[in-house]
Image (tube, each protein chain N blue to C red):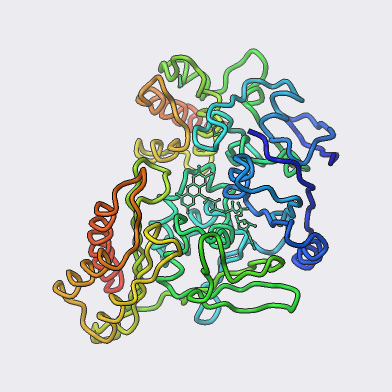
Length: 289
Length: 161
Ligand SMILES: Cc1cc2nc3c(=O)[nH]c(=O)nc-3n(C[C@H](O)[C@H](O)[C@H](O)COP(=O)(O)OP(=O)(O)OC[C@H]3O[C@@H](n4cnc5c(N)ncnc54)[C@H](O)[C@@H]3O)c2cc1C
Ligand code: FES
Ligand code: FES
């Protein structure tokens, strides 16, 4: 399978990418890892006339803590995340997810920015971003802007990014004492997209009361989904087994899966219920360490 | 549209004109005649087309040749000098790590990257490490044994150097 013809451009900087995108308009697409975009082009689901390769732009691949934030450059590959000691030790929710994302060769190329910018509820990073209340930093014709994650995902493959916006950085709150997160997805076989997945991030105060909680769901809705009702129930309370049970039930009720080759709607609701409870327990355990 | 690219392939520098849409695997097999790199699924699932791009395993059916400009590529033809076997090749031979052999070049290229990052992997780490490479014949057990043998051999070699 060979993609339809297109013109290839290599961007040397973010500004260069934006200028190229403005010249070629709606028919141009950025490519970072290309591991979501190129398969779609080979199947002719996508036929952009111009590809702007942003993967060679220097300085967009980093993982660092600054102030209260963890900052991840958009071009950081999933393998770089996996190999980072900082991630492994302080942000195990990423390690949970990345181990279950595609396979090592795909992760060598696929970027964290691309995983989010693709706007696909089947990708794993969006649920983590919702759980951690990430901020997306994008650069466009009017300079840099910060987009709260709750305003980022607009629809099936649709995000808040304008066609010439380059996603440059992801920011999530730095791990602190009393915070912890966990992710798991059920997959038909290793490397498959999620049948369903759940990300949980929790912050406890000194007395063990839940100060903040985020619950994000993978591949059970058209748009990456936050479990609002479950978060509201837990916020400001000491999280008990009984509350966890209730939130699991809510997750199974509130998600919007459809029956497909990965499973029936009822099966997916049932596993969302189960994984939500497990991830709440795991995140709590990590928060209390 | 044509682009001129220069890549180092198995140690040799090659300059060529390629179409924007030419896939790296086609460049390797058809332009360079290096047919050890196979095409299985053509959908980035099977790993038969795995090569090393700047030392990292990459599925070359899902990479544009034009993006490899300036890169160093290693294919199965380049893992050992003509007439000799790389410890991984020897191990696949010794442990019967292949039946039909279709997946083997990809398995070996992937295992090279795995062993570079983790010279002494556990069985579980090997299984996760080759999870993007499918084999329809062996049932994987002998492939795992092959990677284990090669890991030992490569560690011995690096200790004696
Ligand atoms: C076999 C296979 C299995 C996979 N399994 C999984 C899985 O289980 N879970 C999972 O989460 N993912 C999976 N993926 C997807 C993989 O993780 C992708 O690499 C990743 O989602 C997209 O990253 P990319 O850098 O390749 O993006 P690209 O393919 O380059 O881009 C994707 C989209 O985002 C846009 N884009 C990319 N980067 C930017 C940017 N910086 N600014 C603005 N727009 C941008 C592009 O224009 C394009 O529309 C799989 C992929 C393959 C091939
Ligand atoms: S041919 Fe490239 S992964 Fe199967
Ligand atoms: S040996 Fe036949 S596919 Fe692996």
